[in-house]
Image (tube, rainbow, N blue to C red; front, side):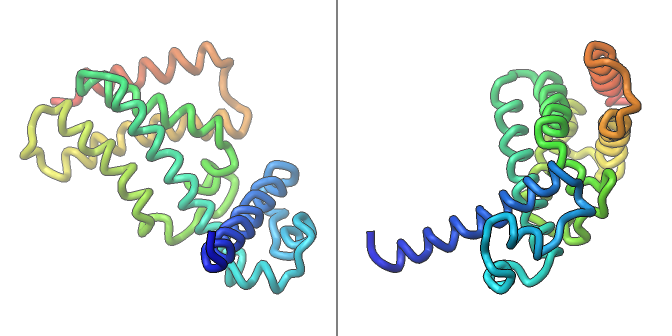
Length: 199
């Protein structure tokens, strides 16, 4: 490996260490506790080194939002690939969305503004757009209408999202039901919306 490659790999490792430290701080103390100084202390770097990689805390939040959306997109693709009918794919993708929220609570909270101010630039991230587009395409497939109006597809998407995100948010703030009840509610909601998707 040449010196340029070593330098580049070193930079990527440092950036990953910064992001990992930020997530560790958040897991321990919450998003409100995150600061550039705490990150530097956590990984035993000087604050100026952190600023070489991220201009400010918002830059770290944006990168973590990008990472989260990339992970969610991967889970959507796996869910879609393991099912055959459009209805099964759409249902599996929303179940993957649910699973992601609880496997990556801190990232989910950041991405969707639960107990934390979400990143204002989230909508411009290609990973976020690609994840949303996969769901939109799945809805169109279930509708069996490639010429469906954007307004109708948007309405169906937000019907799914508002119910599932609402249920996730209730549980993230510890006011939900037990896991078994949550799964019943989630599946009832997804299946109910799929049944009425052509209305």
